[in-house]
Length: 176
Image 1 (cartoon, one colour):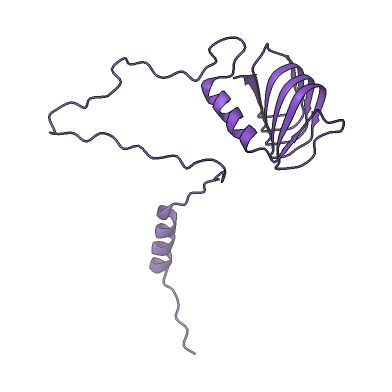
Image 2: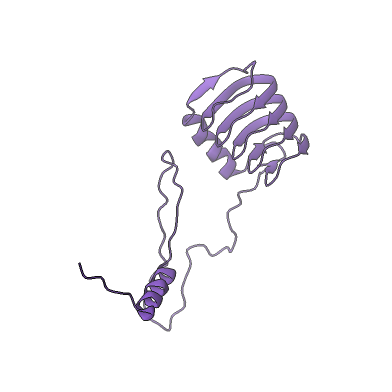
């Protein structure tokens, strides 16, 4: 069998093509609808300025409208996640440990312990919330105290700001 040697120029060209081709990775939530790409309006002539249908110049707000509400985006996400819940239950007596689950906790809960990685918890009223998982999202209406020891998690609340202890890293803890 005849074997050919690759020349340095061929290897350099192959390396250049590989480096310039670029790759991307996208994580997709199968329960979420696919966003529709918007295209800019077409111009009728090159010398005419573009017009926008919104002439007020104001952007829609996604911030909470009062001290006790989630933002419009937060409320929509909470509602979507409630509909996608894999488990609905009253306040558990043991820690939540089902990684990757979407769990809905209904009613008042004096203490909620979450040890979930890459999951979602939607709760109503919680006295003390403890999160030790990573990559977890929690929506809670009212909470008195929050302690987080995990990383890359998000906790959003509606009511008054609780006492917060964040012993983890890269967490988002806020109203909204």
